[in-house]
Amino acid sequence: FWSRPVLCPGAGAMSAAAKSEVEALAAKIADKKDGQAALEGLAKIAAAGAPEAEPFLVAAVPQVLEATGDKSKAVKDAAVAAMKAIFETVSPFAIEILMPSILTGLGVKAKPPTKEATLNLLEGLAARAPKSVGHALVILAMPVAEL
Image (cartoon, rainbow, N blue to C red; front, side, top):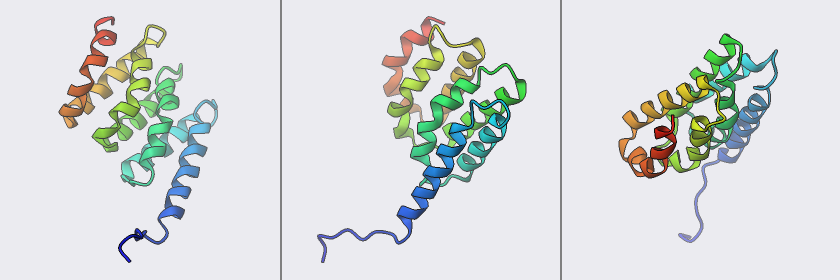
Protein backbone atom coordinates (compact mmCIF):
# COMPACT_ATOMS: atom_id res chain seq x y z
CA PHE A 1 0.00 0.00 0.00
CA TRP A 2 2.66 2.57 0.97
CA SER A 3 5.17 1.58 -1.67
CA ARG A 4 3.08 3.03 -4.47
CA PRO A 5 3.02 6.84 -4.86
CA VAL A 6 -0.34 8.54 -5.01
CA LEU A 7 -0.56 10.83 -7.99
CA CYS A 8 -2.81 13.80 -8.40
CA PRO A 9 -5.41 12.92 -11.04
CA GLY A 10 -5.05 15.04 -14.14
CA ALA A 11 -1.58 16.34 -13.22
CA GLY A 12 -0.02 14.78 -16.30
CA ALA A 13 -2.63 16.34 -18.56
CA MET A 14 -2.09 19.78 -17.00
CA SER A 15 1.67 19.64 -17.50
CA ALA A 16 1.29 18.31 -21.05
CA ALA A 17 -1.04 21.19 -21.87
CA ALA A 18 1.35 23.70 -20.28
CA LYS A 19 4.26 22.21 -22.20
CA SER A 20 2.52 22.40 -25.56
CA GLU A 21 1.29 25.95 -24.92
CA VAL A 22 4.69 27.28 -23.79
CA GLU A 23 6.56 25.49 -26.57
CA ALA A 24 4.13 26.83 -29.20
CA LEU A 25 4.59 30.38 -27.92
CA ALA A 26 8.38 30.00 -27.69
CA ALA A 27 8.49 28.82 -31.30
CA LYS A 28 6.73 32.02 -32.42
CA ILE A 29 9.13 34.43 -30.67
CA ALA A 30 11.44 34.77 -33.68
CA ASP A 31 8.48 35.48 -35.99
CA LYS A 32 8.32 39.19 -36.81
CA LYS A 33 4.51 39.11 -37.01
CA ASP A 34 3.65 37.00 -33.95
CA GLY A 35 6.73 37.55 -31.76
CA GLN A 36 5.27 40.26 -29.56
CA ALA A 37 2.03 38.36 -28.98
CA ALA A 38 3.99 35.20 -28.15
CA LEU A 39 6.09 37.07 -25.59
CA GLU A 40 2.98 38.61 -24.04
CA GLY A 41 1.44 35.13 -23.85
CA LEU A 42 4.51 33.77 -22.07
CA ALA A 43 4.38 36.69 -19.64
CA LYS A 44 0.72 35.89 -18.85
CA ILE A 45 1.52 32.23 -18.23
CA ALA A 46 4.43 33.16 -15.97
CA ALA A 47 2.38 35.75 -14.10
CA ALA A 48 -0.31 33.14 -13.45
CA GLY A 49 2.29 31.26 -11.40
CA ALA A 50 1.24 27.80 -12.54
CA PRO A 51 3.88 25.42 -11.16
CA GLU A 52 3.29 22.92 -13.96
CA ALA A 53 4.43 25.52 -16.52
CA GLU A 54 7.64 26.53 -14.71
CA PRO A 55 10.03 23.97 -16.24
CA PHE A 56 8.82 24.83 -19.72
CA LEU A 57 9.12 28.57 -19.08
CA VAL A 58 12.71 28.04 -17.92
CA ALA A 59 13.39 26.14 -21.15
CA ALA A 60 12.05 29.13 -23.14
CA VAL A 61 14.37 31.64 -21.43
CA PRO A 62 17.08 31.56 -24.17
CA GLN A 63 14.59 32.56 -26.88
CA VAL A 64 13.02 35.24 -24.70
CA LEU A 65 16.41 36.62 -23.72
CA GLU A 66 17.47 36.77 -27.36
CA ALA A 67 14.34 38.80 -28.13
CA THR A 68 15.44 41.50 -25.65
CA GLY A 69 17.93 42.59 -28.32
CA ASP A 70 15.29 42.93 -31.05
CA LYS A 71 15.23 46.08 -33.17
CA SER A 72 11.53 46.63 -32.53
CA LYS A 73 10.90 48.49 -29.29
CA ALA A 74 7.54 46.75 -28.80
CA VAL A 75 9.11 43.29 -29.10
CA LYS A 76 12.02 44.29 -26.87
CA ASP A 77 9.65 45.62 -24.18
CA ALA A 78 7.48 42.49 -24.40
CA ALA A 79 10.59 40.31 -24.04
CA VAL A 80 11.77 42.24 -20.97
CA ALA A 81 8.30 41.95 -19.43
CA ALA A 82 8.20 38.21 -20.15
CA MET A 83 11.67 37.69 -18.66
CA LYS A 84 10.70 39.68 -15.59
CA ALA A 85 7.55 37.59 -15.12
CA ILE A 86 9.49 34.36 -15.55
CA PHE A 87 12.25 35.39 -13.15
CA GLU A 88 9.70 36.53 -10.54
CA THR A 89 7.90 33.18 -10.53
CA VAL A 90 10.75 30.75 -11.06
CA SER A 91 12.05 28.75 -8.14
CA PRO A 92 15.29 30.01 -6.60
CA PHE A 93 16.67 26.53 -7.18
CA ALA A 94 16.41 27.05 -10.96
CA ILE A 95 19.40 29.39 -11.06
CA GLU A 96 21.71 26.53 -12.03
CA ILE A 97 19.49 25.76 -15.01
CA LEU A 98 19.22 29.46 -15.91
CA MET A 99 22.97 30.03 -15.64
CA PRO A 100 23.84 29.25 -19.30
CA SER A 101 21.20 31.75 -20.47
CA ILE A 102 22.38 34.37 -17.99
CA LEU A 103 25.99 33.92 -19.09
CA THR A 104 24.98 34.17 -22.75
CA GLY A 105 23.10 37.38 -21.98
CA LEU A 106 26.22 38.81 -20.36
CA GLY A 107 28.60 37.48 -23.01
CA VAL A 108 30.80 39.49 -25.34
CA LYS A 109 28.62 38.67 -28.35
CA ALA A 110 25.37 39.77 -26.66
CA LYS A 111 23.77 43.03 -27.77
CA PRO A 112 23.88 45.91 -25.26
CA PRO A 113 20.09 45.85 -24.62
CA THR A 114 20.35 42.12 -23.87
CA LYS A 115 23.19 42.74 -21.43
CA GLU A 116 21.20 45.48 -19.71
CA ALA A 117 18.08 43.30 -19.47
CA THR A 118 20.12 40.38 -18.12
CA LEU A 119 21.71 42.52 -15.43
CA ASN A 120 18.34 43.97 -14.40
CA LEU A 121 16.81 40.50 -14.20
CA LEU A 122 19.76 39.20 -12.24
CA GLU A 123 19.34 42.11 -9.83
CA GLY A 124 15.68 41.21 -9.34
CA LEU A 125 16.52 37.56 -8.80
CA ALA A 126 19.22 38.52 -6.29
CA ALA A 127 16.71 40.61 -4.33
CA ARG A 128 14.22 37.72 -4.30
CA ALA A 129 16.65 34.85 -3.72
CA PRO A 130 19.94 36.22 -2.36
CA LYS A 131 21.29 32.85 -1.20
CA SER A 132 20.79 31.23 -4.59
CA VAL A 133 22.49 34.08 -6.42
CA GLY A 134 25.19 34.17 -3.73
CA HIS A 135 26.11 30.58 -4.52
CA ALA A 136 26.36 31.48 -8.21
CA LEU A 137 28.57 34.54 -7.69
CA VAL A 138 31.69 32.50 -8.35
CA ILE A 139 30.42 31.88 -11.86
CA LEU A 140 28.92 35.35 -12.38
CA ALA A 141 31.84 37.47 -11.14
CA MET A 142 34.00 37.35 -14.27
CA PRO A 143 31.28 37.95 -16.91
CA VAL A 144 29.93 40.92 -14.95
CA ALA A 145 33.45 42.30 -14.41
CA GLU A 146 34.13 42.10 -18.15
CA LEU A 147 31.22 44.41 -18.92
